[in-house]
Image (cartoon, rainbow, N blue to C red; front, side, top):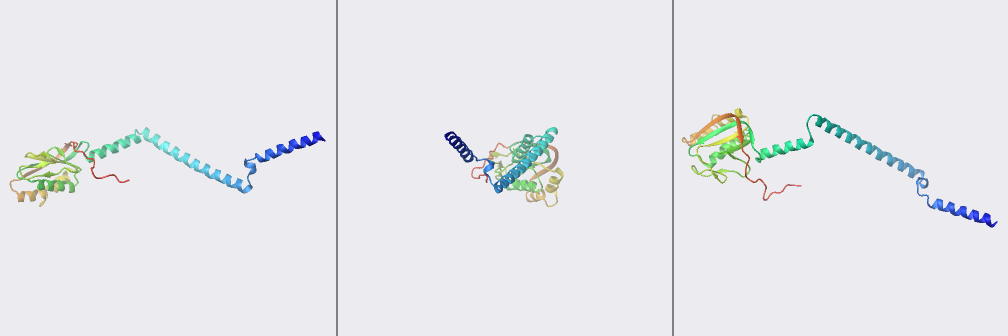
Length: 215
């Protein structure tokens, strides 16, 4: 009897330990198991979607690489274009060259530059100095300055763009060239379409002092 009682006691203790340590799926209700299976299916579907997206991206990159294109190369190209249009890099292309002489003041030169911009000029230089933000032609006749640089006469204005459109905008009847000639008969402005013009980069710092990028 003592042996049987001892055996029953040992079996009871083992059963209690087994039940108390059961923290796995066997302890979950049918409703909890259904919810768990649903969550697993949803997560698996999300993972399959992510895998498909990554495979598609890899395929696009492989196709771009086979064409000699890379994401880095595209970014470098975009950066080079931005630097060029901002004036941090030299540019070349077709356009017009204006040769100016006579008693021109800064306001008259600025009128010519504005006319070129309105006609679609993509980049400008006066006397070989790139015109960017903050660079203004000023001064009375005989003492013109491009920024802080004295401008000798005769001097040139060079503009990149569609040379036919720029030429037509400048030389049209009643246009800016005709107006300046009527106001100052001693002013001579020769407009020449040019196949290839090279404009230098600016040496001016384009870092804003007061402005900050918006986040």
